Length: 229
Image 1: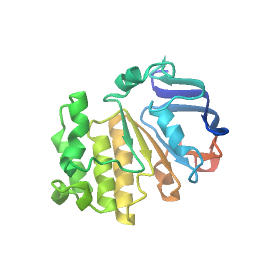
Image 2: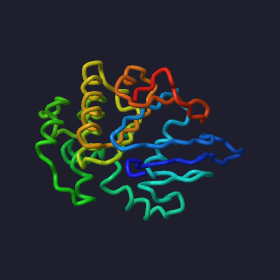
Image 3: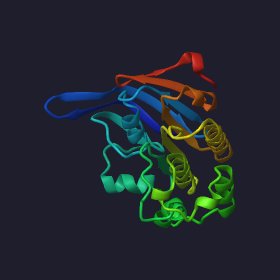
Image 4: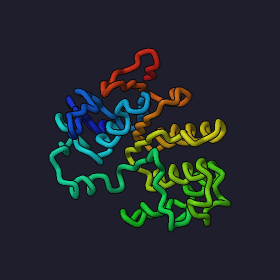
């Protein structure tokens, strides 16, 4: 299907140690362009692992993953990196700013890897909206948790990805900035026909989702009561 960017078919993921630990169990998911998917679940439910597989950062133990119609779970790490480049971005739960780079250099870093022509009007809009104009020369150690989170959000958006994965993107934000981020993500998806998959335990973000899913003990279910089509 032309409007499908990622599809998971019967995907399971387990980790081996002293015993086999199942993290995802028989997940089926179709991610369409231009849609926002909210994945609700408590810590340890498998949200981050699911995002990593959707975003081609991890491979399933079983099942199939398709990206733009091509099966990709059999590809090498280098081949997956090529698939991700310029098309998939990630807002990490642990933020992952580079401490030796200023805020603006952290934001622009993805553009160096994919040779992306920066849309400075878009950058200005994001900086203004998230009230970071006067923070761009500061280093991560000089930023509050909320400011660092907002820098990471802009970094993920700067290349205008087709697929944005967001792992607890509002966790460090106050109510005002949380609402701003929700509006930015909603408008970005609509204006760019981009997919957003957002994992959270924060019920307040549900209202921007086209689809709301629940994950518990590695099992993904659609929350019919919250579904918006």
